[in-house]
Length: 114
Image (tube, rainbow, N blue to C red):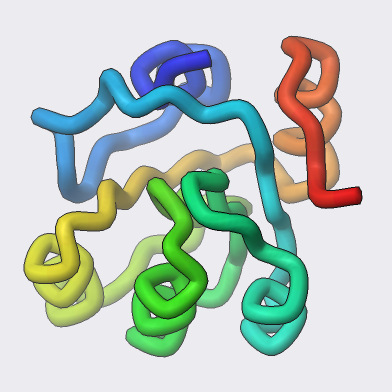
């Protein structure tokens, strides 16, 4: 599934990386715990979190995830979006909760880390 399809499905606002929405996503990692993301993320995954500080983008960069979606209507500060831009990590935001996002994406065939 492409990031563009996910954007439409989850009614996301694109905060950064709108020119890179054709990324192919097949796995998802979801957590507000950045240590958990680092422990379980695989390269090229989609990261879902409610943590909007700069550490979320640092974690995404180190873990090698493809993109970040902020959930529960949370929006990062501009400096976080700018840092993601520098790291070439697309950033989206949705009002949906993490549990619902995971359910919707699972129904569409995306898997988590096993």
